[in-house]
Length: 427
Image (tube, rainbow, N blue to C red; front, side, top):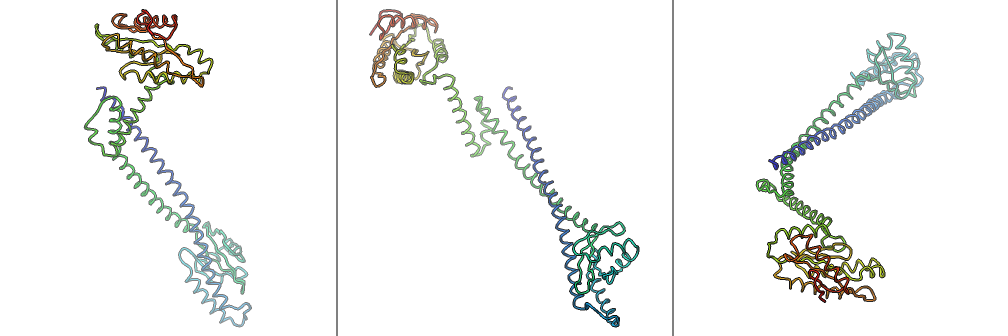
């Protein structure tokens, strides 16, 4: 039931994260879409406006060239028939250039309409307002915004140098806006289709992977809790298995580092005080009434003087070197640690007799005497107190108390020796 609850909790968290992902995905798609459409509409507006202006300039240029070729700067009034024929030809050209969305006309220097569509004739000659607008266009060059009876136009104006006539192309702004709207609509549709396509693809990929991620995460959690689900493992591919192995290695390394931080003495790498007590109690709890075990307390002689005289750096080196000696002398199953300062504790469980503990203690004395300090090659020694089970007790407190009194006795009687249960000192 506990495993199922944990699995459901993981699944719920992953589903919540998936929903958040969808919201984020939607936002990330919507914002660029809005920006894309906005920029496209703005760009389309200016592009179509430029096209309208360029189209007007092209038509004006065509008319201007025709006027240069067929009309003289100073023509005779007597040649009215020829002039009228030429105006008719100009009207035909202007009519051909005019379309539903752009109209071309020509005005003289007095703002009188010379050539243009019927629409323009009726419009410009209809009212004083339109006549004034027509006069405003006379002599202009470039693009002018014009309003005729409430309808707005883009007027592209040119002037013929030979005659001084004005050539004007009008295009209603509503048609320009229609073109802009049409292109913007196409851009919007394409943008939505693209966004939906990306969203569908991203959703499919995410949904396709979500269940595998959930299975993988649940399996990883089960591994951390010491539970294994073979069915889930069988569903993983090689890449996921590699990631899983990496996760297991990471968990292992984390536990090792955690053990080092919480159980070991940082300076020496031996067990710390709390770990010594915990492991001694654990071993003592499993020892029978007739099983021999020994607890040693080892104190380095003269260490304080050496530390004060030669400095803490050399003092730390002595503790490190002596710790390496202890690591080599004892089995991995033995409890070996630094209790405090220059004091060490060793617990030997399941020994055949007291003689083994004594032999180990003598080897410690010998090894301690071989630890040399500094350039002066100063030597140290050790005082060792030993308590054994079942003779001196079966609890950690009882054994530690006897061993502490034994080491004190050695300290008080010349140091560099061994005492078992406060008995005579052995050197």
